[in-house]
Image (cartoon, rainbow over all chains, first blue to last red):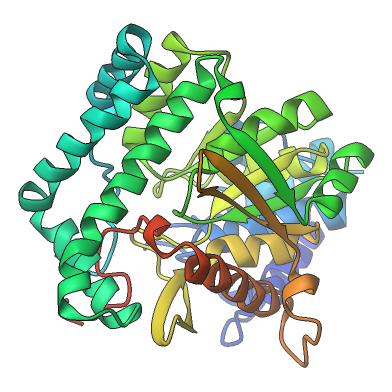
Length: 85
Length: 300
């Protein structure tokens, strides 16, 4: 699990061009969106959706589940473990 | 009046309901005649819209003072006509209009092959007039909407007219789950349509010279199209003389053959601005952004 969360953090940093942030700066359980976490916006959310699609073969189709899955690095990793290819 | 569009459309469900009844009871010409009165009402009673329209005529189109003062009459009438035509068309009277297609080869190719595609339009003309032609060709059309009031209007139209020809993907600034609907629709080979000219409180904007003055556009639709890596088509439905609609389709390649070292999103955006500019130059009175689009007189 830890390997997956670290890999995800590196992928997020690369996809979102977060130049000043290192993987260890991202709290696995911190919210990705909103002021208390990484403060990502909707374009960043798209990048996360595309990471899941491109790197893990996950095609999300239910808008309702998006909020839950993309809450934090941990929630993404949990979903990848359960549904990834 | 601020630079940003405030997410409200004048008229609302009641206005639509009124025109639907008028067309049913008295016919399309009665609706056009009544529209003339509505236009005269709006000139003084929608002062900020009238001002923006006059400034557009004067500063952007370069009209003289006298023509610029009269320009809102033409523009409001064209706007009202676009609404009446859309209502009439969806009431099963499509044969009252003539249609011509310009540059539609690519999009039909995508529809036939089931290739998901992003379609970017603008608040010009009457894009809904073209929706009727997609479904019979097997296309599923999704329209991404920012306008809360339009969703109410859509309900009125659905109750009173033909089956709606498109699915609405509502945009909520607080909840980006609409992105899942968009991604999923494109991957399923559907069309996803945006308006590329308005934003409400978007942080990411692109700037370009548009009709001779710098203007801001939302970056979202262009970044999204670039990231999804799907084909992009620009689409405008413009009203010509004698109730004839011309559906104009352009691809980025048709507008900008040389992309230079531009990033994909910038290339799509520049091509979009070029396509929109040539459409607005040809149909200047069908530019329906009634606010200070170029930030000509609002506080910066």
